[in-house]
Length: 144
Ligand code: SF4
Image (tube, rainbow, N blue to C red; front, side):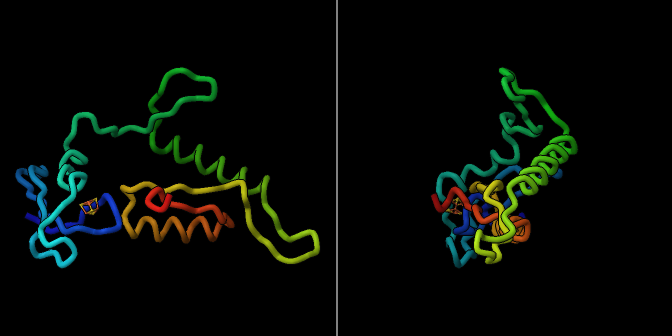
């Protein structure tokens, strides 16, 4: 058994993750957690499925413009496509200064919307990265 933290939201409930033969076999609330004292909400209690469900998507899915079917992409190809589009959108929409010469140094052409399976460290790095890139529209679904 290893102690861990539920990945689904910022509450950070404690979990006990039971592993057998290199495989997660059970996840339950950790009574030693001062945050949750052994409790998990239904989503957290079902998080073993995040690891083992046969319905879990493990490949990048892409639907081309005007396409009607999803296709699999390698992670490398998808990452390259996202990087190319991010760089182009930033370049094409960059605002250096206001009309009267005040510094802006921002882009409104790039936004980021995070999801509930991002953990605190990932959200921290995403906020740092997109702010450094000049984006101002940075949100998480938990705040919407
Ligand atoms: S999703 Fe539920 S179990 Fe997981 S951290 Fe949030 S409240 Fe806790």
